[in-house]
Length: 279
Image (cartoon, rainbow, N blue to C red; front, top):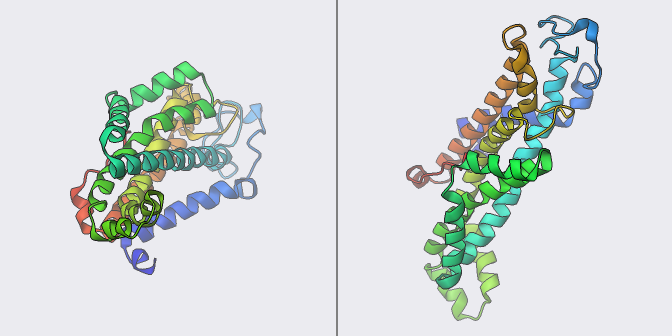
């Protein structure tokens, strides 16, 4: 852990991400106003000492909305990637370890999802399921798990030929024991790198879906939904879109920066592996 923190990219990105997570957790304490509080007399006010980020069309404080919006954005990012990782890694290990018909079925299923552009597929699934955060998250999980499945399978194909894996089989260890004890720990590095990059990508995709009106609805503060609400006033009150857009950019760059630093710190060979997410 100490060695990882010596990496400048990891240290800088962790400071930024730590600040964002702190803001999300303690938004109720840090926010200067209640995000449900409306003041129509002060609607569309530019940034000032009373409202550092200005106010929206309902007179709500933009800084407060951004702080509370970080909760939804980060929750979607961590949850979608966490569930996708669990599904993808489990299927990838099974496919790579057993091979044969099981590998063929899992990989053909994976390829069928990868055949479609990621954002188009997420958009289509969300439109079919209906508006809302839960449906948006289901759509993003459906798209994102394939990346982890392919990475886990490829790494498992390499690990299963190692001497310690064969030795474990020879002494009678069960397949489940071998996969959990020997395979999983030795494929975790590329998976963690994919996860760190994936969180930023998912947050960006979720913001895009909310901007289109298919994700988080306006009643719930979320950066993408704030962009959607602010586009009507883009020429008269640009701060409505500027500040949530700025925080989306900072968050995505911080996760990508962390992923790049983690890749360099864990294994220099990972530089030669394509680790782009679906989005």
